Image (cartoon, rainbow, N blue to C red):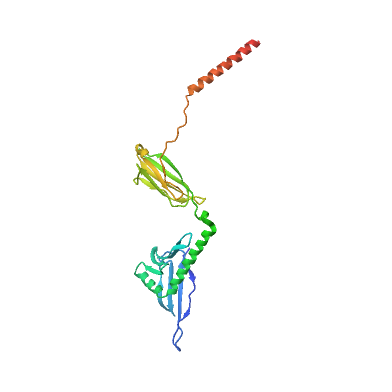
Length: 280
């Protein structure tokens, strides 16, 4: 099926102010998006015209982002900030307490000067951040420290797995912890060991807690030197856990079990034979 351009907005005609007695000129813009870009067609196009004369054109996409936040304390919000990003990089940032803008490059400097020349813009941004942080502060009070201050300690286990090249892999798993920030490391003789260590993905559980794992490849002879060290906000002290060889199942001497059983059966059989002989 042929790719068809999808018109996002219709042309917007605007009358340009001209001197009395002059003919009217129409300014219009068009915005077009293609649902399946290809065959040299851009994904997004914008064009501006005065009458039938094109005066501007744009056929690329950029990403404009805004991030606002603050540290919500028990008394009042603090550390408030507002940042703008352009194509994945910091572009402009506002220090809310001092109403100071910081520009990342020359292009951002132009917008910075424009906004500084109009203080009402900065004041509106400040009001937005203050309103957002005030709402979060109230939410903290409404839900209480118990809900927002949830702490779940990790359940730490260490398992071993034999490799194919006379090596062994130890895997340290942490389950059911909250919040998500956690520090995991393998130590050898008390020192952090990074060689042949691999971090697994940190992922959520269905109950809102998280799990993570960390492995290390080592010589089996050095196994006793390694510990998995875990630090988390819900732990009063760090956890250090070594791999322990699973307890082997108890073994039984079949001879000791079979021969007494045979002996008991022989005695019972003898009693049965004797009873039958006497009854005749």
